[in-house]
Length: 118
Image (cartoon, rainbow, N blue to C red):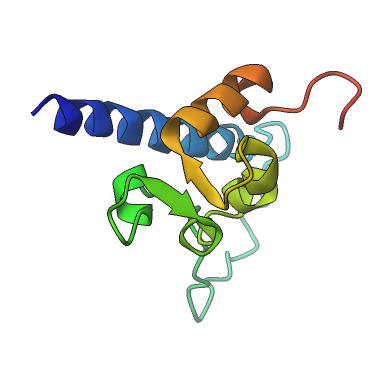
């Protein structure tokens, strides 16, 4: 029972960490000082363009074999996780544990670039 609660907490933490950059990537509202002339009709798009939503999966959803850690192929659906996988896999065994990932996040400012790094 305790392991289930711990996994749920880690899953929520991972989902939050991966969703945070998407929350800041939203576009600014339209400039209210630049009104559209009312004499010109607005053109409606004939087809809706689908927008790709960032993948938001929990640790448990990514862990296809249920062993509690992620292989590189299990982490592949999350591009940001794939980029840091080798660095976060502290013991270099090709399996990223939740503890290794949390340690990496804590050491790297939650995955955000530090001043002078980007």
